[in-house]
Image (tube, rainbow, N blue to C red; front, side, top):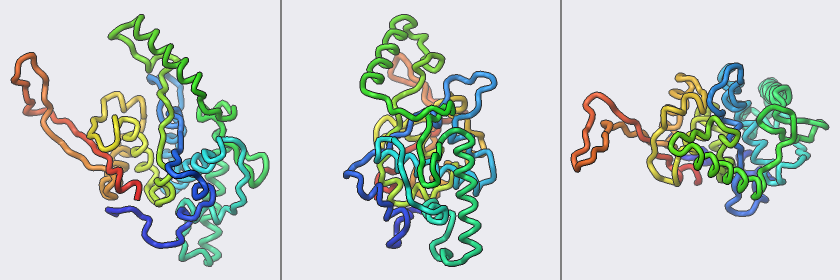
Length: 291
């Protein structure tokens, strides 16, 4: 798949009423703790989105897509409680667990609906959502405490910046925010077009997680970037998951990969080029993701 999956007309993700009613340029904010963790401590479970990948591929895909769709839907209502009158079969169409051509096939529709129902049960068991009523969904904090998710206010963001400044003044070059209470950066913000063009509903679970990780490292749209070694414990995906995700993203034309010799800077004008060490650099294809 080298282009957007949004080709045919009338696909479920194109007609979502909540995102369709959102203002132009609407951004979906997702806190980093849904995906990232501070420096590894013993006995700490993996972040929710990464933990979802620890099952069979189809179940993982549905869990990740469903969770991301809930973030998008609830972002249009300030992350409060939201009543969504949608059957599990309709959710199955939205997360691409059911082919639209099979919507009238009773057995396939029932199987897809059960898979979505199990994904909802999983999210509730992990205390990532609450469902006080059958059609009502409320997002809980990704830290799995069971508390409601409350977006950071401007005052909270400024307070965290001041704490980081204090740490920088005290520790200087040895500052490592990943060991502090302010390890988490501001929420990741994604254009709603990722949902309405079908990328969220069609990419695999590993590809979606890797895409979000790369998004967090990209300094600005379209700028080539490196993945630091700290990725292995900040975003603890397995090697096979990383390989699967990057392979799927490259096949979809979402990212490009370039490998070159590692260059060591020097005080003079002649930096040393390594002959046995290489660096991989990545570029996100934003035009493909937003059309």
